[in-house]
Amino acid sequence: MNEFNVIDKYFIDRQTQRRDVLLSIGDDCALVKAPENTAIAISTDTLVAGTHFIADAKPAWIAHKALASNLSDLAAMGATPSWVSLALTLPKIDEHWLAEFCDAFYDLADYYGVQLIGGDTTKGPLSITLTVQGFVPEHRALARSGAKVGDWIYVTGNLGDSKAGLDVVLDSATRSRPYSKELEERHYLATPRILAGQALLPIASAAVDISDGLISDLKHILKRSNVGARVDVDLLPTSPELREFLADRQLSKQYALSSGEEYELCFTVSEENRGALDSALAHCGATYTRIGQIRSGNTLELQSNGKPVDWQLEGFDHFEEQVV
Picture 1 (tube, rainbow, N blue to C red):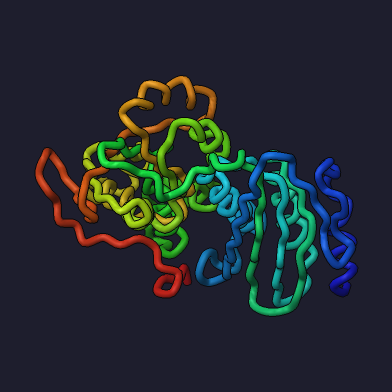
Picture 2: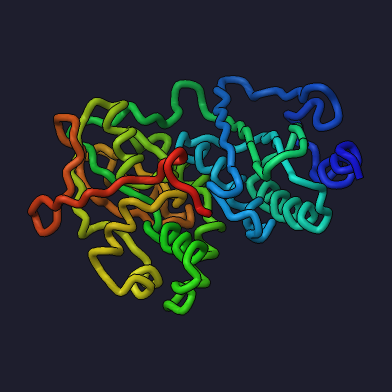
């Protein structure tokens, strides 16, 4: 089987054609058309075997993680997903691997209404590059630069599970701990908060998805908005499974701060808009938790029981960390 056989068998005619896709896979370029009065949100991410996943991980999990991580970027902007292109580099053509990968990829893409419109396949070390695109009303996209002093800081979901799941991937000794299997699955099978991002469009002042760890990603908001923040670590939401897995309350909070690839949202809301959160997020399938407040200055202060804590924590750095 050669490259063109792979494309024909696994990537052509797998999805219903969207009305805004004029020409899809099979030509030199795809042709698409955006609705009037919308901006197009575009994000590209690469996942590399040995950095973002182990090469022998389940192909379905790799596919889900690759697409979910990209969709999470759209969620952070409040965008509605539309199209995706895929560049897939494989060490060899493995039909069993491709079948599992593509089935999971298309399941998730169809769930969010995303159409694969093009890409590339080539031989080399296993890696996956996706470019996702979506629509957002003009001049209304959520950005990292809108936080103001006095705004409240929130996160969706629970934090720390992905880091614990990575522990299970890397250290077989942790598989005997409670909920190790569940946490490993959560590391790969995150839920992008698309509906929450859309609901936050008229409410949030700034947002970012948590891909490199809350302690790193919140600092992106602070830098772009030229503000500081105080976070109460006692308020950080963690799952019962994480707490039992670690059996250490303080460590679970540290995981919540530093865990990368969570793909939850961190966002800020003014005092005026706080009352609208319950109704806005009621049907989004995600809980949310207030964890702190935006302050003047340019530093991030962590506190517990009203006192500063000095935890030397960092998020995920793609040039320093690897999963194998």
